[in-house]
Length: 358
Image (cartoon, rainbow, N blue to C red):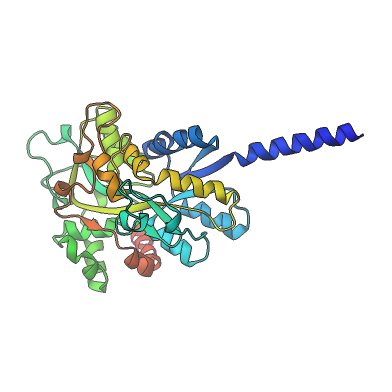
């Protein structure tokens, strides 16, 4: 009897220990998710012995919110956009993260001073800067080629279908820039009823040529299949298709809308100590620079920029492909989380109603 109890106890302890050495990280999948596996997950497991299970979602903020509200949190760490990190934190759905626990830059600069603006918040730690851009298939435009966001909306000069994400965020901003509004005036215009009408009027001008997409993998596939001549897209997805797969795609940086992705811990998640260790590891200077070897998203730390080198092919310099490269920022817009926290519900309703109109 005693032997049976001892054996059962030993097996329970073994199972508990094994379970403790595994965390689940929810992210966006595709080439972005794979870049995290290569730059963060694998080296973290090699250093700590803690296995990282990657879970993909079209938008991790949505299942994260559902898990916490249902009291059934199965995710230990999630990767979310900045506006969602702020909103979820304000709603009490995330654990706070003290930036003092994060590793300093190699020169000793505290993490709080090393992260770019919006790279840290009360409940989140930034990893990358990504951008919504538009891209085109060079074979569709052998002569004059699109140069500005205005060209995206000019189906007379540049005919063909347009891929656009089926959400208002970034789309309305790009519509205004496509109508001639300078990047630094977009939110001032979009805060007014007339500005909102102007953005929807611009979308109306090409509505019959729009092909809607919902996940990041779709725009390069739509272009590869010849379903669209141009598409709004995440810059890293287009880079991957062009460089890794040799597709004839070209990014136009004019009118890009850039923002941050950050790591968060859902409220009530288990294994919080391991989750924090993962976040500390994944957002140190070297790891953020390492991710750029796999995808063209800029690191959220200042000290990482100088360490960004070549793509995994060993020949492509990554710096020119970063959203934050000075040459790519001449008419760039930083997504305003304040604007979207205040206006997302009403604009989502307006967008949905507009979609239903013929």
